[in-house]
Length: 116
Image (cartoon, rainbow, N blue to C red; front, top):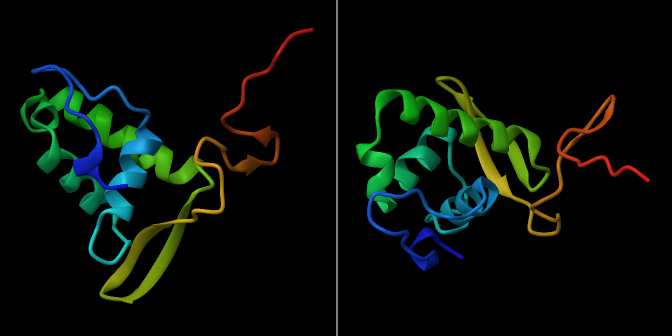
């Protein structure tokens, strides 16, 4: 799946996909299947006009959502590359359920607690 395969939203609206779907499509649709956080954000803004034209505050919010999902979703694996500074890239682990969050010392970060 690549970003081009995801449907366009109505004009002026954000795509109706969870962030992990958008990020996964950006990484898997890239030339080598590996991107930095900034490259993911660039791919998203190149794909949908909404992200190119939204306010500075909205841009900060959606870029923060990308960072958050890259860190909490188990399907995104951080790869460190040595070189100028420490550069972090992300790949997709296709064997992991994309909706599953990483474990923290308190349990799952992204879970819903059901009451009985």
